[in-house]
Image (cartoon, rainbow, N blue to C red; front, side, top):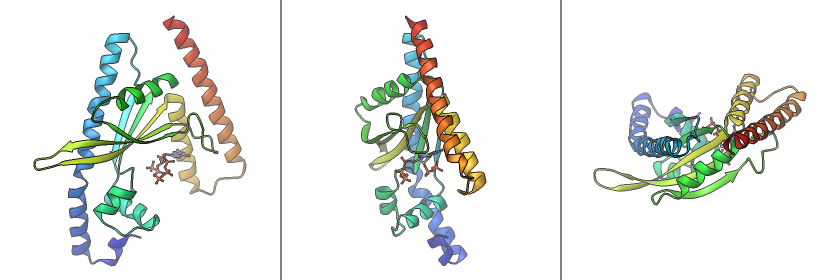
Amino acid sequence: MTVLDDLDQPHAAAVLRDLRRELMVYKFAVDELMTKLRILSEEFDFAHQHDPIEHITSRVKQPEAILRKLQRKGHAPGIEAIREHIEDVAGIRVVCPFVPDVYMVARMLGQQDDVEIVRTKDYIAEPKPNGYRSLHLIVRIPVFLSDRVEKVKVEIQMRTIAMDFWAAVEHELFYKYDGEAPDDFAEELRAAAVTAADLDSRMTALHQRIRR
Ligand code: 0O2
């Protein structure tokens, strides 16, 4: 249920069309950041014979999903409310081979003049109670339009391949169970997250041995 359900079909379509137009800047912000990340990946690989990025994905949230989230958080619909309260309209996921790569890529990105780090949540240093690990950055970058410059927030989730595997499977399992998972699930998932963290440590140790 969103505000759209209270409107007749032509009005709902008009609201969605306006919203899609306003949301274009989020796509441009994602495009800019994807280019920055690809440059870091390629240039670092050339200079150091190691690519710190395994792969990158991105998405811009659908207008209906944004309106639902806004409503869930108790805010009236509108672009201003979206800008202020929804920080993951634009999302990028950076998957790295090793844990040190995650922090290095985050640092290299944060050092760029036009990238402002608004907030960092380090779920690698402090995993969530269910075992979820990732480094989350909310960044703000300028998008240069034909008649103005807009500062746009993007959520960047950074994690290793092992963390990504765990998060993807956990999401799939809970989606299937619609949040009503059997009791022993939580403990199993936490244990699997510890195994993934152990795998990360062992792979990083091997990588460091080879580099030496
Ligand atoms: P989706 O469908 O991936 O976008 P917010 O809810 O964004 O207002 P919060 O709760 O502080 O604020 O956000 P947080 O903790 O930074 O997490 C936001 C996103 O991280 C989630 O987005 C997920 O993508 C991911 N995430 C966080 N915790 C977990 C977890 O336990 N398991 C998995 N698989 N992913 C997680 P959304 O909007 O929930 O979902």
